[in-house]
Image 1 (cartoon, one colour):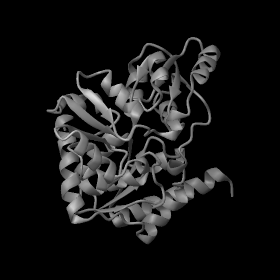
Image 2: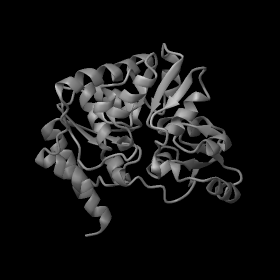
Image 3: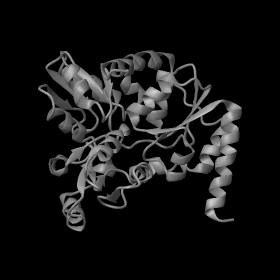
Length: 310
């Protein structure tokens, strides 16, 4: 049996169990192509949080890393939320602990804490507001304090700091996304020499030096919007390779190149079509969040959605 036939048959089985369980499949832009293709909705963290909050389905099958599935549970606590691989954990989210947040609050008692969504539910429960890469500057600017604590991504903090009058203090100092942080100026120069007419569009999780060279700095949803609206026909994309698949699918008349292949997020790519099917068929793995965390983290996420105009 060839791979295309196998994917088609597994996808058909997923459709059967999706209908049987009244499930909606949400997938992040970094997922494998075949997982994106079987999803009901593909998007970035902010879009997925909004979809999770509004769905009428009985079951949410979340194809992303664990903190994303936790967020879906927090915004829709009465739904069953499943994740095909419970070990799909974001390394950046593991860089920040609740103790880090409490210590920073002790040092800056009058400051509010804006927490990047790439973090654990326990950390979200200690935050004043959550943000995503799509709305970080907007959320930081909306805080009441002049000094805003921000974690765990130092590169996104730099991006937000450049676009607000607030002073942004990063917690912890070295937090970053390993997939994006590995990009170098050499990668940029090499890509631009190969594709001199292409616009460079990068994620705000990349290093500040690369941000300065970019034509556009966007979340993954913003990248799709930017490339659709741009008059350019060629783009160098500085983010996980799953986004390039979506861009090529959505905008077939334009050309897209990886800034530095391969840019892979191993936890994202750990979710396979077989695991999606097994999760629906066996009703596993369910994401559970305590009542206390649901309430406290829910307040921080709700505040983000309100400030984002949702």
